[in-house]
Image (tube, rainbow, N blue to C red):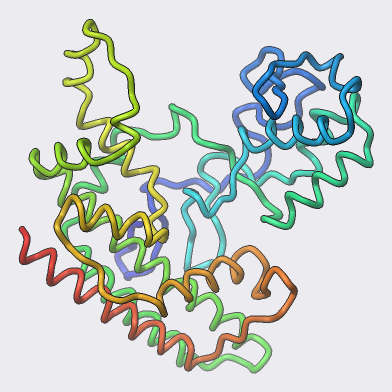
Length: 329
């Protein structure tokens, strides 16, 4: 996450463009034409390939599974890795999008699958979120992005500056109808500041230390699962830094269960007790994706006191993590 000169959060990556609509050929295809330009690769639940003209011959349940698999291979919840602009309260769709399930599925399957079945899948998907981003593509990450991340060394100061902005804004003189919306945005912003600190602190520390990069690789299952032929050994050695950088760019940094293990195993830094932070992250998901309501439709009350409380808890959490980090360096 990068900050403007005035301290406001712009987004995780430099030079972000707001885009909306179709990108990389994900949507707007005719039935069976994939977003890579060839025939779509449909697969059954057990991974068996199936051509589009055979899809109507499957049972409704099987067609449902094929369509859902196709969709989830190409689209994801934007919370996974799409930058979020805390100042304006919205995602920055740098990968393309946002996409709506009903439009995407209608374009792809409308000519070969019963509309009622498509509508059922749309309803199921919208219980997760209403707007979708493209899944990861190997061309998504540019080298200059990693250089930006590695160069951020004042991550603690950036966090404190952002928290100070939140405390000032929560006291802003706004009318009664607008205030709840402002409080929700600031609550979300605190979580954004927290994950930005965790991302920048870990990435900067690891990318600047050869031993830590090796420790990360040796303790990350994704690297251990990769198969490497003898002829590719030297190529892998030459690209190891980029592999680490790409891996770090894919981490969802508000997934504290995963991130805490990374800090503990690689940096020897143990997170403090964080139950209130976990609860706030869950609230953040509902505030972003369900407009402040739980999946059962119950509103999540967020007022000035909630924002101040979360800001203080996040500040205490980051202070302890940063102190341990400095002791280990």
